[in-house]
Image (cartoon, rainbow, N blue to C red; front, side, top):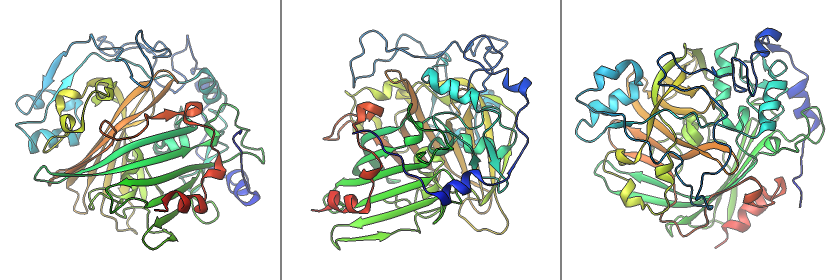
Length: 468
């Protein structure tokens, strides 16, 4: 069964029949983008390495599996790399210019246990060649709606703004559901684990299906009536028993101004046998199963949801230590007990590297009141993925810290998150996507994930999957 693409004329008018603002990059700027031999990579990153050689040149990233790889066991292509040095509470001030406010806070909050092992920098980001070509081709034609939070004429399967002209464009780039290459299908089982301040934890076992038709290599162009601008998610809880059968259907439109809203959410409760619209699952509404430690707009790499309630600032690119190439955490011989500690995951399992990062600062607009007055996203120059986030409370005090443990799924190739950690500096944290102990199938991407299409993501199917 081939993927089907659905669209409506009203949505098309929203995406195409609207004015845009922010000047497009010049032909001279676009000419700097290229797969090889140009100053900038297809994603707009500086191709050259750093002056001191600590950050190497981007030479194409990982595009083929290393020797010994047999799916689903991802071999660490950098297993022979040695730790260069370790940052601890005793020496972190020496490296403060390369640390986020969140990491500094982690050292100060957990001085006895938190540390960062620094490894050689490996610029592993890669994507299929057609993604590079599409990104470069549309670099000057994808624009931003005058409202400031909608991409216009984005074809999918590419990075919206490899040469961002303002902070809103940069912010959209770190949203892989709308403005980055996310892959077109994902079938994933995972554990959502809430760790209490005393170290005890509760785990919810979840099965999710994702579909992003516009990221498929055969997706029609954005001016086609068959172009599908939606990102679909079906989520079904399987354990513990009291939550089994509960589910969520989530459909996010490329445009935040789409008819009925940019996000549509339904929930199913098997005890009531009822499907309900869940419009409250937006912005800073508590994310299910997080005991209030995670909000809806922190989900999925920390960039979930509508972004219109903040003003944005794109700060100058800087070198920072960020989690990267975390293949050690992909070892399926690990158990959740080995990973999850009292205050944070085991730092000896995490790999940090020095990369060039663009901080994007979100400050709440004065007409809104949300629990986060400011958020800082740290965008990797190669992938445009949000590597980590700092979240500030209403009084402007740093409150929560997020990390995205990423790696290149080189058999695709696809740069993606392996797991997410969301720390509350007042105690407790949430870790997602650990599936070591889960009685489930390994994570599958794209054609490997199956042949379901948009017709799978219906309220009727949500109910049938949740019936117990």
